[in-house]
Length: 401
Image (tube, rainbow, N blue to C red; front, side):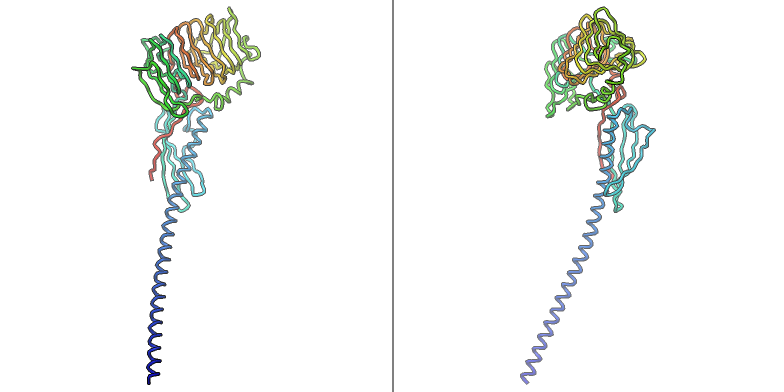
């Protein structure tokens, strides 16, 4: 009897243990199923977030490719970044999806564009980004010395538009005279600037030092490109290199072996065209007759216009342009007026002292404006379409969707 009861109790215990094991296994199974379901949910959510991120990356890739295209077009010599004659809607492909770029012109002068990049990921998620691209003038100052700008006593700087007022006077100045430097601006007594002093910054971002600029209108602009036309490694470097072999030197008898020398009592007449010289010395008269075109001098060496020389122009200042890629000095001190562009961003020193007035724009590394006459900045040469290249800026990046 006792044996039967012992067996029965043993069976009861085994049955209870079995039920407990089954319950535990069932619980573990439920937990496992729950974890699997949660893992599946998390996987779906993760895939969704990845798809959304890929859509953003794709849209951003479209924006960056448009930036790169803008920089390329900026240096290619085109007149407008996105002309109406070219497609203003295009698509691109990335590893994460496709993007569609839409360009809308928002302003005409200077041109401004709204860029919309629609990114579609492989998971069909969409993100939309926008960016404004503004096309501006290559040069933003009428007198700019990247390293140093010195205005000697009694130097006055005015401004005018040669297209509407070819013979300006101080009384007709338009108040747009902009002078500046990235490193040092020095003004002496009795200087007058009918406009703004542009305070740039050196390569470390430190603003240019100013001396004698008290009570002047200062505009802090950050680092200003010392060579916006690219005379050494940009668009104008290509033009200078081309001018070495394709030029109008034969039309100027005073150019021999790429050296331009104008002796006393002789006249060198310069018509519209492209010229390449390795040095310039002017003692006589230079008559610029490019009234219906532009006379462009590409210079790879020094220039000296002696005080006894004469440089006269039958057209606007913008018709005569000197571009230099050299470190050699440029000294222009002719008797009477001088009009034109002097672009020498690597010259050790550019000294300007016409016997009367200077009309045009000076852009160099180190500028000394000597006393002698007034300087009139031709604001027409600071427009975005005055040269083959221009400056671009990006603004208002934002996510729309």
